[in-house]
Image (cartoon, rainbow, N blue to C red; front, side, top):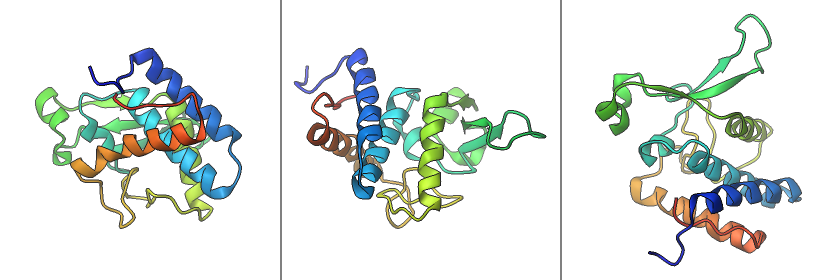
Length: 172
């Protein structure tokens, strides 16, 4: 087994430590990086999909959608979900297992909303937000390629290891 391997309880603890680190972080650049770390860890640990490509290719309004709890009421109350019902999405998961919609856990939704609010306030992230863009986009707005995406959790691990001694995620 790889020396960096983590058991599932350690992975969950790492996510919680990352959230604590984000909440305790001050300074715009450091807080921005901590928020991206939390998003990545939430994406990979709260609701792991059958395929990591589902997370890598989450796109606002396309595969990542918002649904209000009450369409007639408060538009802020609701949740995000992963929509793999569109045949044009071409995710391997939907091709092999059929179309599906998966509601995201409230904690993940909370940090997606924080991320979008920070973007709307003009914060610049490694992952650029566009209303119809990818959640985890490169600076030019495209989805990360497969090999580039595999480096993202590693970058999160490096960031967390250097900012918060209890965090050291590696393999998910």
